[in-house]
Length: 408
View 1 (cartoon, helix red, strand yellow):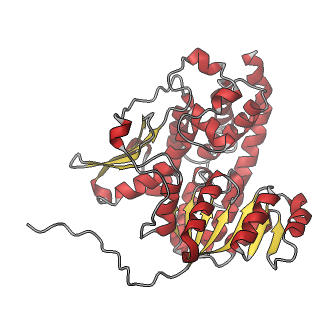
View 2: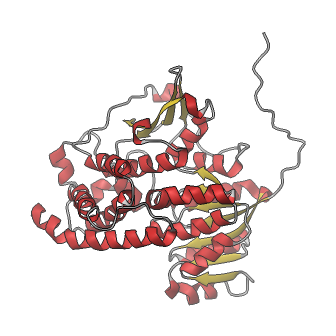
View 3: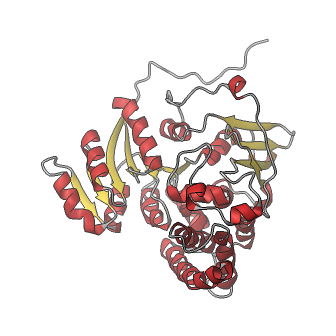
């Protein structure tokens, strides 16, 4: 019996240098991406980097990688960026147009890690020129998934999922054909409140919500993980990335965060992707694809971990996940409203205007109100998606005092 052959990497073939742009270079995803680029040496050339407002960190990266262009989203920081880059010959800009310009520059590969709805137009600028886009911005697909993916098909852009869960599904899906697919399973750590009672979750403090047991992430995504809103966003994202219905996507709570995603096929085989909870693993997969890069993450030692456990998510204690499924099934602009309302709710929680348990209630109230007015049709352009997003934010802000009053 002959062995089943693996793909053989042709080490004699010269590796062409890949040009890279990193949108959101100073955030947590950006940090991991820049670390991999640093380790990759001459294999990568950085074309452009952007940040929201952290001029000091952005300028340091721009100098280190000798980029062609650096952009800061905060227009008020332009003079500071110019001063920080004086004498380098590095071009720079500020504001939304400058971030879009960075994405439009001729890089082979673009990391789209600008958080929030602000990341949609820059990501589309990369898509429109047919680039390979490593997508770490959930809002592109939650706010305008149908439009975004249709645009990518038309331009020939390649969308690679950089989230750990979607990257896991991307890897596992290669084991079968679409007609053989039964379902995908996205795993969730359960966050810091996995074993808490509903009463305790209701009163959770900001400091408690930010203590994630496994992952080191930014403030917004950490709070979303604590509420499981993040997992809801991932369900919507998976539907658009892989052309799935809500009934083809399941979620399992997996507190060890070792199995990141699974795919079940019609023969009842389940293919899973495992790895240490380190964002450099999925990012490296995207950065090297279709080859694999040597990775700096810790080697997975299953014997040391001892056991892997799974639980059905409790939608009564974590209603945000159920709201996401409802928004996906409703379709139209409902997912856009879901995302916008959640951003307003999280900001209110961070400002200590509402209790943690009020986040889901504000999102639910906003969706119910919006569906009567602004969310009937799916956005057909970036401007339409942003318009729905803006209206939903205003609506959520207007409902905030009412929700906060009920909490008092």
